[in-house]
Length: 131
DNA sequence: GCCAACGTTGGC
DNA sequence: GCCAACGTTGGC
Image (cartoon, rainbow, N blue to C red):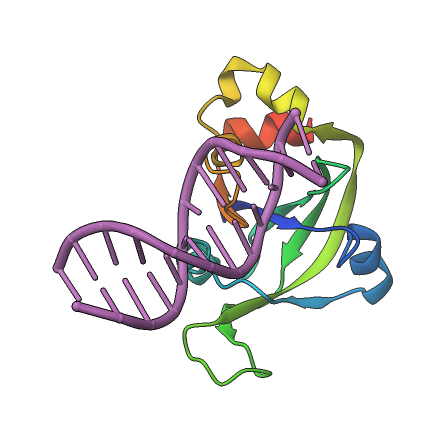
C-alpha cells in the first residue's frame, strides 16, 4: 500500500466531480515521469487529490480501485490510467502555502517539481496533509 | 497576465 | 544526438 498525490485543475475535474461520479478513470496524464509513477500504483493505494489554479490545496483522499491499464480511449500503450473512487474529504484543506511554510515538507515533490501531476507521497508527508 | 521551469519538437 | 525554438504548466 502506497501513497500518492494527483493534481487536477478543479475547473476541469474537481474532487466534487469525483464524488458525483462515484468512480472515474484518472486520465490525461502524459508527462513521462508522472506516467512512470502512475504505472507503479497498485490497487488499494490511496491518493491525495490536490486542486491547482486558484485553490492550490489538498482537498480529499481517493482510493485506487484498479491496476494501471492502457487508456481505452487512446491508442497509445504508454498512456495508462487508474480507476479511483472518492474516500473522504480532508476535514480542512491544506494549502500550498501551508506546505511550503513547513520545513519538513521542503523536499516534497509538490514543492520541488511544481509541474508534476502524479507523485509519490511519503508517510510523514501523508500525515502532514491528512492529520 | 506574467513568467520561470520544464518538456517536446525538429533541424542539423 | 545536440540544442534552439517553441509550447505548456502552474504559481504568483
